[in-house]
Length: 128
Image 1 (cartoon, rainbow, N blue to C red):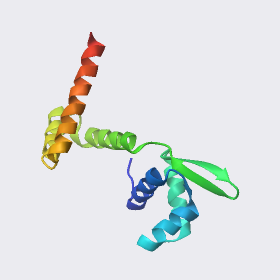
Image 2: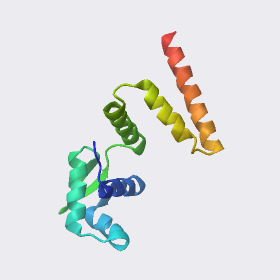
Image 3: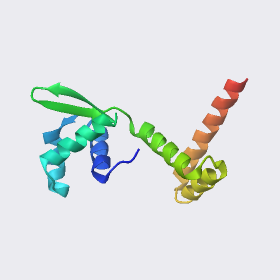
Image 4: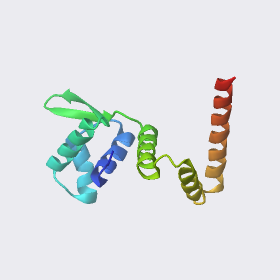
């Protein structure tokens, strides 16, 4: 799945705000980046059609909220791109991941080690 710049901005905004209609979203971004209300409405609709937002009719307008959480979408995007570019080359994926970790601070590296240890423990308990 490909996401445009505005789509990513709107998703980040809605992950923070949790719910908003097009007018509220537009007023937030109007100051920062300009653009029309129509552009915001069509982008929200596109995200809805991609199943990334849910919406509910309230009066004459829709209120939008995230249909997926940030972590879930990130996982899906990473999976898509690794399948697309790495063609199941696990070593390439792992080497790229290790290269990314060189940019992490000590606290983030520790968090990563903890997450890996938890995943290993979960996997070994499923095998037994």
